Image (cartoon, rainbow, N blue to C red; front, side):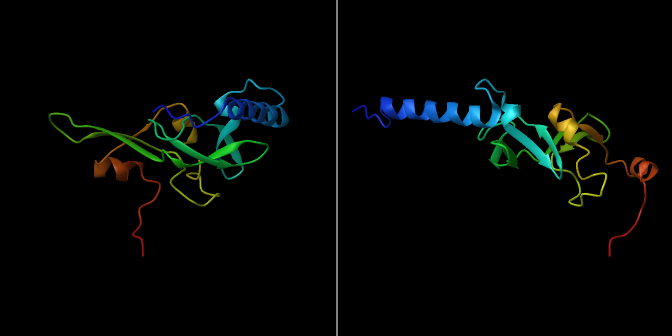
Length: 140
């Protein structure tokens, strides 16, 4: 038995609601996902792609001015290649930053990489790490 869950009136009401919502918040009905969905870190806001349950998943919650902001989904992405010899070749990006302190340069510095579907190199070579470290310390 083919069960219909929504009536034609339900569909018409949904379309009418969506049109009213878009006109109220955006002044037009043809908007991009990036106009509606934002990646928000502190006071910065960026256009954000991705929807739930797909590659590059992003779930959103209400934000401001009719927009939504991503609050869970892609966060830390790591790609690793294992060569025949030597250390792995690692590329990473951390969408929501490597720090939760807004004053840190690592609070939102990787957002442009994520939005451009890029990554940064990372190494397990301890000498390379020490050579490029801004400081070396032991956490207490």
